[in-house]
Image (cartoon, rainbow, N blue to C red; front, top):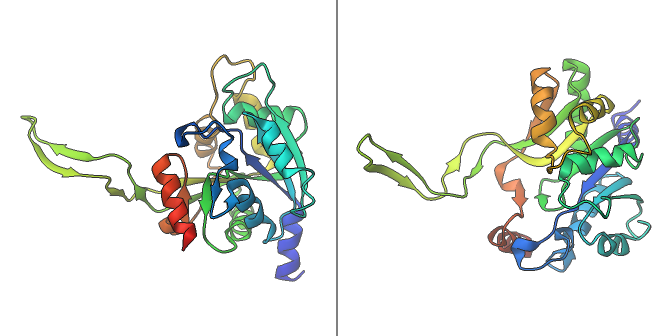
Length: 257
């Protein structure tokens, strides 16, 4: 099997899970965040197109707030050349969190439990060319070599959004740095899960939990303890997160270039 055929075979075994249930409240609007626009394109379109141009075609969208706006925009997926399935949080539930949304999609079989998933967020923009297929190939090789079952995409460091200070014993500030660059590997919100990870999700996440349940903080510690989590690094300037109005404005500047 040639490298190209092997890559295509691995893509065929992979579904894309797009977690897009958040709202754009911090941006001064109440629409789903994935429908915000940058350079005339919605975040959800940028996300889908960055994956389809690499050859991925099976998508599952996890939706919540004003989900009808997103489903109406995506439709059946034909205009992107994809197969689209939607998992919508139950209407009686508010603020489930990513963990419950993922487990609900597994429970209702929107996510195919026999296939691996690449998990992405439309508000984490990745600028490196063909990064998803590179990430997938790195993950598959690490599965065979190290027996991992999940991978996370990282940058080697990022800017801390607050000022930090060094303070002596008398309370006198000896150093003050506004928004320092921290050289700590940082997750960019792109993950790959093999089918066995779904068992961890079922074990650790309960749909009847009265509080929102995060995905990463719930399952990642278990995977790390069992030496099941791999990683791939990309350059820090290839990740553009959009969580605040300032980051949204910065993303607009980046894409305008």
